Image (cartoon, rainbow over all chains, first blue to last red; front, side):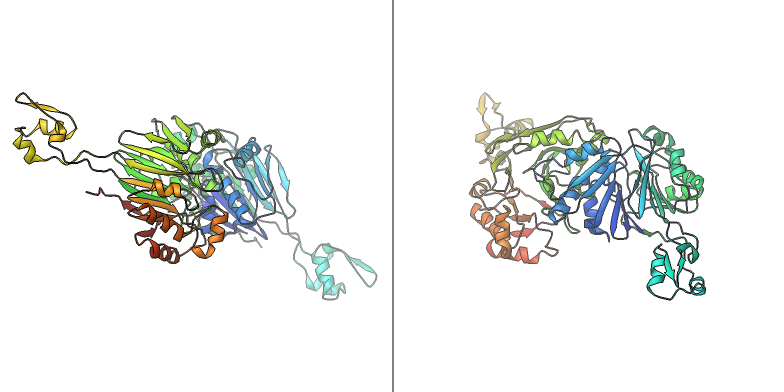
Length: 302
Length: 302
């Protein structure tokens, strides 16, 4: 699993940062969080194939989080995409996507299905799920948790041998979670597999003030990507516009027991970022300011 | 007058080129032609003040020519703009701008006035005018000519002295086009000024096949900026989608007697551009492929 930060700035783009968009490269598909203006060009500069994007989760309907959708959809269409694209977001996203698809003379060559999500919804996509909770912003806004399903435990070859299972296809069946029969005796996966191993978990806050719901959502996350619009010296401004300071983002990561924190949605006023990163690291040492087009590999824990 | 090429690519952005947008820095204001996705970020990278943009002319309603409008308007608004912004384009532009202003939760803090133009319209803005003609594309599309009014002729100091006009405020009145009285005798500007001098003229084709109307519009232009989506080896493709080849753009410039030709809207397939430029120069030596963020000063002819 690879996180690619396509845009890491807030409100409007700067020379250094495009507005926010985060791609998560999963096995065989790409899941995206937010899609600000210019995201398609950031994709072309990145290692991510924009044709592999299966689902886009929009945190909220402020322009810097969704204006990249129509251009991206159009370019997918011009490049011959046929498979449907799924877009999810808070109340109003389906209507907005419908407006975006009816601008000018554009007609998508593939289905675009947009769905309003109620906070608390958990969507099951087979090998992973996405859960959303309500964030604390000036308009309806969602935070998302993408979590892989647990993987089967490690295969214990010694146990399998002791039970008389011959090496080969039966090993693979057991690893795949299916029982086999060996000399009239039923061997179940539990008899040869160790405890199941947790999948990876990535949480994205969207735009938000510090929120207990997001602390709960981000419990033990491998990576928390959190609003960090301002430094604490502007905490009143952050609160007024429904954003977090770097210190607040760090406190959320710490309380959640996240392994790692990436700070995003930095105000265009921060040309350098050292002051923001330093503030967060004072509270949560595993904090980093995310940079446009930087990548982070999320490894399994064991 | 300075032309700043903000985006020079066609259809969708590439690493090398953003989609099309051209700013013309005039005395005290900026006039823009087309505004593809990501234009506001290109502006931030350029020497142009995006707050000084007074008027935007949209050639047609294909997404790569107008999707930058809502983000740009939003950023102008967030930066406290109060003066109205005028947008002009072909039939349908007013409706599209109205849709763009009603996406998500956006509310502009200043007036945005959009107006559908009939081909053949000439708009007078005091020191300059903009005329449009119908281009030849797959949907209604306009080409624009921006032309400064003629400037008064040069002031002939020797003639003024001979007529007894004292140096000082009366010189300025005469230069400003007003008659003065010297010792009971009326002196008119024509008596001391040379022939009036032509203003500068910049023509933008938008997306189009070669067109006689654009040849006429671009008569004696200082700069013609023309669709040059493809090389002649793909001329069938260019014709099919309502575009010009580099050779066709060059022939239009030559027939119009333009002083200089900039090729824009290059297909993303052209990573290098030498082949396109070479083709145009074979027909019109003053042809150049425009590059993102490059600038061209348009000087007076005398």
